[in-house]
Image (cartoon, rainbow, N blue to C red; front, side):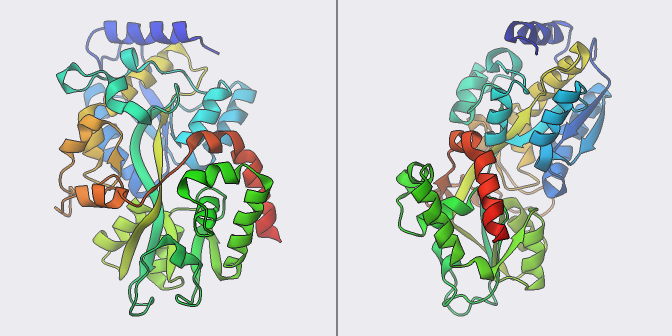
Amino acid sequence: MLTRKTILATAALSLVAGSAFAGGHMSNEMTIVSWGGAYSNSQLKAYHEPYSAITGVTILNDESSGTATAKLRAMNEANNITWDVVDVEAGPAMALCDEGLAMVIDPDTMLARAPNDVSAADDFGDTLVSECFIPQIVYSTTFGYRTDLVGSTPPTSVCDVFDTEAYPGKRSLFSYPINNMEWALLCDGVAKADIYDVLETSDGQDQAFAKLDTIKDHVIWVDAGSTTPQLLADGEVIMGATYNGRLFSLIEEKKQPVAMLWDGQVMDLDGWIIPAGLSPERQARALDYIMFATDTTRLADQSKYIPYGPARKSSAPLVGKHAELGIDMAPHMPTSPANLERAFLMNYSFWADYRDDFDAKFQAWLAK
């Protein structure tokens, strides 16, 4: 594994070579891993295409972020790292960093400064939750519901998901513990501030599963962010959980009879890691790309294509209109004041520590 000193030296050489985006001593091809769909398209428009136009670098897109942690572990075991930059959520990034599978990033030398010479560390602020993680966006997992299927009183609370009498019909939830366990405890009377303390105990876990038992027979369990929007569009569920960007597309672009429930939205961070163990040329290219793709302007540019809040403070004032629809994007961001008011903030450290154990328990519960 490369040391922090070696990483910093390589980054310095990359920048000294000339222009910040010069191609000397850097790979001319790179593989960037992300999630696919509208999100990968937003990265293509905001980051990949401009970077390739400047540098001439060929970017290969891989849509394996959903299984990135397991695959990076396998690549490390085989001593064959084929990815250069990988898009992951904050929790998995912390776990990969702890395992030595992701490079340490020094924001003072490896990330672009903000306007008025503000350091990247100050500009990203609390979103720098791991020394290996370079945040791009703040997104949320929340619920959409069919406006024509919920009756005359539409849902206003995330706990309405558990009310099968007032809102009969199928719901969809992701088939993993993150978010589901938090919502279950929240809707069983546990205060937001106490959720993770309770969830750390076996009694708390039993409480969450017991609450989920009350709707288990009414749930269609999904594995991908694209599934719930399709189920909503087809009328197979009356409400379902997915990413706010997916719901935005369903509502604003596809004009489906769907509305978004911001109450209880679980906010999370998504961003880049650079795998440890790359050759110097590939590492230099990855660092060069990261500096470009996470500057103030580029992060704001991504919001032209998808309603995820940019991770930099300096990017927020630059959020404008959708590139194709021409609508103001600020109100559609999870971080807008009105939407933020009733949000639930994920504990990244908790899930970095306990994800594997909870995954096993959750799958066992699903199989019952």
